[in-house]
Amino acid sequence: MPTAPGDAPLSGLDDNQIPALAELYDKFAHSLEPFSEDRDNAERVFNSEVLGWYDRLGNPKPSLQEFRKGVIARCKRYLAASDKPQDKQLFRNIDFNDPP
Image (tube, rainbow, N blue to C red; front, side):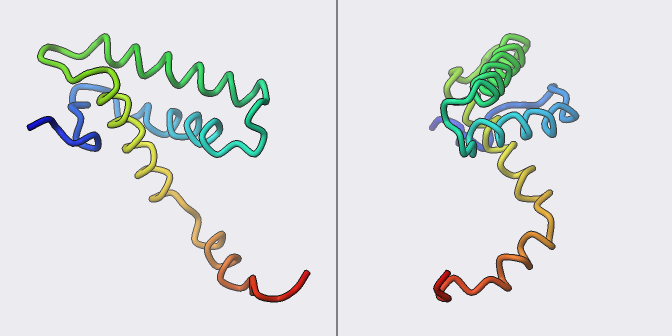
């Protein structure tokens, strides 16, 4: 059975890079301007870094697609863990049923 994407073998890689990769991922995956140059550059750099990590993996290695999914899963976990509580509190205080 193949490894789940979130469990892709990322061992031996520098976990200190996850915050920077998570920031890049957030910038292109959640961009409000899908055709902006900043968004495209963030995606390009993210993919380049993921490919560099993948090339440094020892054998046996998962497919590049599964590895990329694993990196994205780590980035999402990092972003969720670093979510600021005051941001959540702001949204709790907004009543979305009120007319503008």
